[in-house]
Image (cartoon, rainbow, N blue to C red):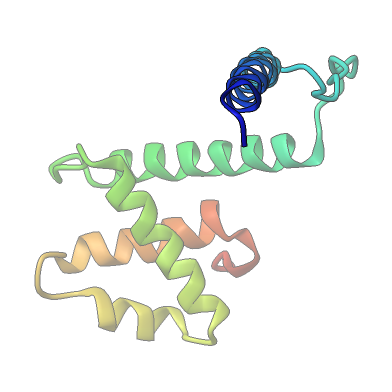
Length: 137
């Protein structure tokens, strides 16, 4: 190869590198700006969905349960509402698994939960959190 041909080859390579860098910069700018992204239409529906109504119903049940628990157990520290609500949900799950209220009560009493607390949680859970298992008068 002659020196002139080498110089022309290098000039060609420099030009291609510049074009390649420019193409890469344009591609990166397009990706960062969101070009080519599909537009998302705003939601025009103001009606509540089934999910939100189910969540609202669960919240209402938990609020009623916790309020009743506070009335039934005024001397008990119920500051951790999530713990007591989870305990009530566990009672409902035990009922779903076929345990009787007496069996659930027996499994709860003792340890950190007193008998009056266990009794209140079992009965009030059945009334508010899983009314299909509510005690009959």
